[in-house]
Image 1 (tube, protein in one colour):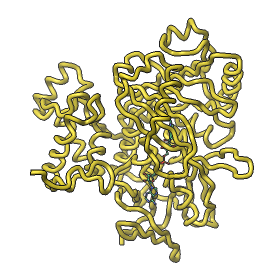
Image 2 (cartoon, rainbow, N blue to C red; image 1 turned 180 degrees about the horizontal axis):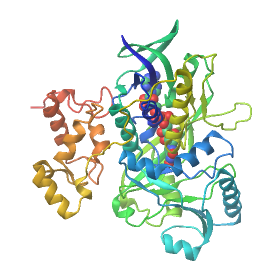
Image 3 (spheres, rainbow, N blue to C red; image 1 turned 45 degrees about the horizontal axis):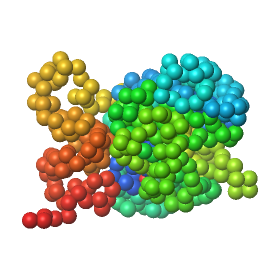
Image 4 (cartoon, rainbow, N blue to C red; image 1 turned 135 degrees about the vertical axis):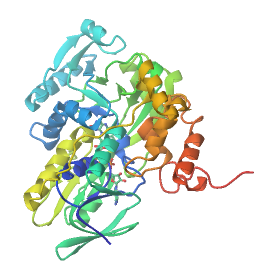
Length: 482
Ligand SMILES: Cc1cc2nc3c(=O)[nH]c(=O)nc-3n(C[C@H](O)[C@H](O)[C@H](O)COP(=O)(O)OP(=O)(O)OC[C@H]3O[C@@H](n4cnc5c(N)ncnc54)[C@H](O)[C@@H]3O)c2cc1C
């Protein structure tokens, strides 16, 4: 049985940020993840906004962590070598109700410490983005965009190179308190640990109950998205959000991605199913209608894919009100840190939450610092982002840069090979996709998916029928046709 000081359940952005912060200390730490890679849950199913923090109640953990996470992100992006653009954001209005709601949240933002928000008229909007809808807007300069998959991968790789172990395909089924330790029964075997940290996202309430905390009432707010071609992205320099409603919720918005695509969505409706990620014609039609109000270049010919994610919010059953994030630890539940209801803006808040979890452990355990802790990690060098001179140099140094595997996104064999041999040992097709962008272009993998499968097979010396697309059971091939 593997033995650890700290066991983190869940390898979403929150679990990986907690792992990265705990890797600053000399503690034997493992992350248990039921799926085959990091970011298989909602951490890959969101808008990728670095939120500013003007819609969250002053004094709440959400408000505090959002502002903190926002302010530090230029430094974080540098350390972890992840793409990030501080684009700012336009929150647009059409009428006096919109104006009143925007001004209400501008005031809340100021209390929360969000800097630089200001109201602008149509003329000024045109200078920032002539394709934005609306008659007036609030300009929020501190908002930004990041790639949530790359960010989660970077946190995990950094934690891993600082000594944290990752065990994929390890679904936590039971947690037993035995003396001063916990025995954790998983789908891949048993683990013994002193501390358990619950970062199980959509299943966090169930893990919370197993640890003796409440089974918090949560409800899922599902949102669907359209992904638009980079041709649309050329006309979108800044995220465009409609005025919030009186509770601070946003309807469908349009956001550029760091790679130049555009996301239109999410909408929002209730679901009970923890992993119900299907998309529907009804909601796609709604996104088209609402997206057009934000972004005049919302054209059907630009649609290349859709996806959905679910925000799991804790709510108060007697009032129906949604609640703040829960991050708790007390002596009645020894050696546990419980994180539940980490819905939006969990990407923005991941490192501040990770720091708070690590501080609890530090206070109780007084661990030595990890002498070899390095906050920096290097990402895969992208051929598509190199200058012509850099490309010539890269190919001369490594001829694998001279072979394009994904034509839409110009991803080379060298990048795919680096991704296959990633530090976390992940080798699904989506694992390669999330690390390199191969298969993410206009043809959505029609050209390169089988080539990537073949490379995984050869590099790892496994059979083609062992290569999975993303999850356990999602085999790329099950046999030969001739
Ligand atoms: C539609 C949408 C839009 C959003 N937009 C933004 C945004 O723009 N900006 C922002 O900051 N935030 C945004 N968010 C919020 C953000 O995506 C989430 O808060 C964040 O991803 C939550 O991360 P997590 O690690 O808690 O959960 P997850 O990413 O869901 O990870 C939980 C992990 O735990 C694993 N797990 C669960 N149970 C077990 C078990 N028993 N054993 C082992 N593993 C287990 C799961 O497989 C999963 O990998 C958005 C969310 C959604 C859904």
